[in-house]
Length: 67
Image (cartoon, rainbow, N blue to C red; front, side, top):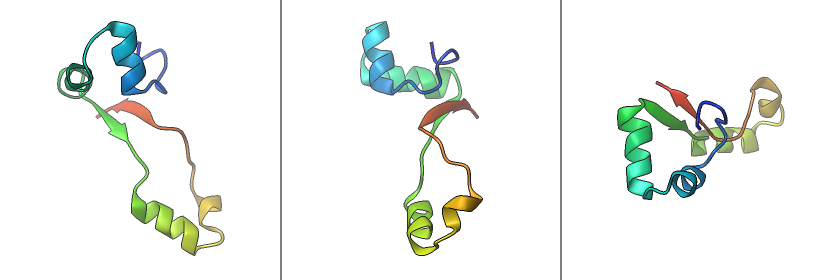
């Protein structure tokens, strides 16, 4: 499921598979070796401070990736 759509949220996966949020996160992180990528507060602060900052980076939606 995750491999075919990296934009799924934990909630969408847990509802589709019928498991708890805790179990879903455990399977994704511990069993499949995936981690969730987030935008940090520092990145947001830099974007707000520099007029051209966002022109120098590639942004995207949240996703799961293999670590």
